[in-house]
Length: 156
Image (cartoon, rainbow, N blue to C red):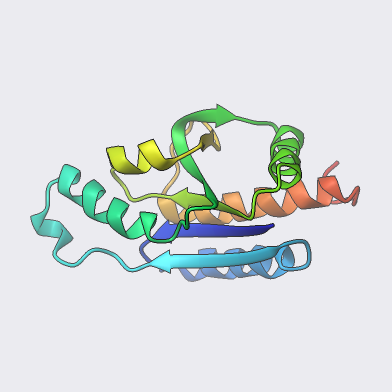
């Protein structure tokens, strides 16, 4: 199985880039992994939040092929413990899924079309984090999940 993490706009804080790079490089030891930063929208300042969600949604959906399972990181999603999340990943691998695509959307969330296409929604927390921080937190949780599945000592 392949895992893709698709995010809207670039990570611009160096400390977040450095942390993200650590976990992205570690993940490649466990799974075929691809990290995709979509460019920010041009003239976003002239768009309403609804228009931004629609435009971002169009670009996001191009990253999911017909056999891909779309998982949104969404505040209304299911919350997992780290062990529970690793079990979710194992279930997806056991199901024969070819590609699992996790998406971190823009500041205004997802369009209706993206919600319709998604199979799962996952919440990292009921707290609100910046979209750039969520990238690092989620990459760490993916890494943690794979170490749990492999029985390694990272998760205590």
